[in-house]
Structure formats: structure tokens, C-alpha cells
Length: 338
Image (cartoon, rainbow, N blue to C red; front, side, top):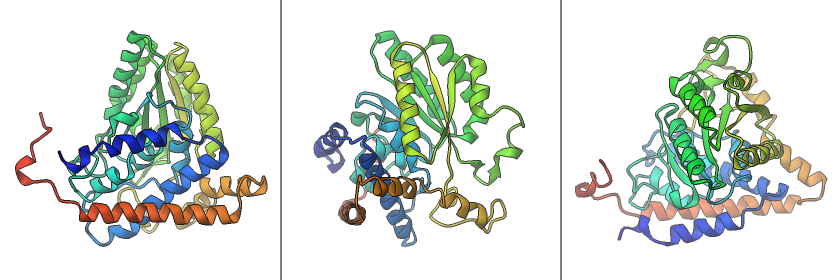
């Protein structure tokens, strides 16, 4: 049996999901953990041991943490290329993720999928894909299964504003509305599709969430940098879906700090300015909640320092284990393909 099949992965993920803390303190810890993991990996990327193209969610943590805090263990999520935050927020194994980035057998996909194909079905992370919008339809398929089986489960599709321009987006919404399936569509609108701004890709007029209403789908706009607001909206959405009232759509306004793919800053490439990036960084979802928690006595500066050290030790240990782990055997490269 390979290391990635070790039952400890399921046990650890199960404990993490069962003890999920949806308080302000728990949400803050969840965002801080994801930020620490990704910033550490961004630092290590320059060493060239991580060879997979990597799309970081730095700056967008509130959407993943807020939505997943409203879900149950048996709900499922699907993601796209920027999937790290969704995977971790739903309870995915950190070692499985880091092992995958390092291309090792201990990875979540046994070192074959890389950064953009994270999955851990036992905690509800069914699939991630770099094909724009691909998992929208698959999430609707899962939701249709839940509807036919009459079970109170929700299927969530995370995607960016660029996927809204794909045909599969409209096909998925149309089918979901027609069959009244419990699908929660979460659009992380970070204003850019690679290097192209929203204004030159989509016509002026109604916002994305307003256009969705044409399909008869309940939708709302959320400040994607306010994790408390995201969680509240996701709770409403999940209750709506579980109640047999059909799909729900959330458009979450947020912003990625780093380049589209890779660990660098890219405000010198002509498509956005340093001033714009800094304005959004000033709206950091972690800083925002931390200040609120400190003001309300939910945590102390010492807590924040201790949590940061805890998460750094955790990611350092995962990296060390991944580096010691073997690469997949060449003879087994086709295992799992069909």
C-alpha cells in the first residue's frame, strides 16, 4: 500500500471536520492557517522543487473559509485551478496537498495531479480542475443525485468571474434551475481573468449575480473580504438548498494579491497598478477580522502570535515529510487513468 493510502489521512481529516470551529475565533484561525501555508509555499517556490504551476489564493481566504463553515461533512465541493483554500477549508489533508505540489507519491493524487487537481472525497473535496468551468457541471450532477435520493446534502461549485463567460456556466445554471437541484454556485469575483479586467470581458449593465436571476435562481452579492458576511450568506444558501427550493448563487467580491499563476507580485505587467493592489491589501480579510476579535476580546495579540507559530510548524513539518517521500514509480504512471 502506498503512503498516500495510509488511513491516517482519513482519520486526520475526519477529526478536523468534526471539530470545525465556526465562531469568529475559528474563522480567523482558518484564514490564518491558509495564508501561512500559501505564503510559505510561495517562498519555497523559488527553490524549483515545486514544479507544478501554482495558483495562490492569498487575499481570497474569506470566501473559502466562510462558505465551508456553513457546510456539513457530507456536503461536497468542487473547485477550479485556484483550489488550495477550498481544499484546506473543507478539511483536506495538508500533507496530501503539499505532497502533491512536490509531485510525491504521498500527495493527494499520488503526485500525478499537481496544484490544480486536489481532491479528498472522504471530506467532501471531490475534484478540482484547471479546465475553466469544468466542475460546474459535475457539481450540478452531484446535486441532482442528492435531489433524486432526497437527501439533505449540498453540492458547491467554486469558480472565478472568468468562468461566467463559458458556455458550461449557462448550461449548468439552466439545468440546475430546471431540476431544482441543491447546488450552491460560489463566484469568486477577483476582477481579472489572468491579465484581463472584467470591464473588457463582460458587457456593462447588471452585475453577475443580477444576470443569474434570469434563470429564476436566488442570488446575492457578498463582500468576499468579510468572512462573517460570507458565512452568513452561505448559511442562508445552504438552508435554501437543503429545503428543496433549488439552487442558490453567491457572488463574492474579492481580490488576489499575487500573480495569476505563481508566487510573484505582478503589478509591473501593465494590467493593474501597485496602488490598486495596495488598496485591496488594506482590506485584508484576516486583518479585518483580527482587529474586530481583538477589540471584542475574542483573542489576544499573544493568541495571534501563537497561532502563527503553530501554523508555521505545521506547514514546515508537512514540507519536510513531503521532501523525504518518494516520487511515483515510472512503471505506475498510468495507474488510475482511463
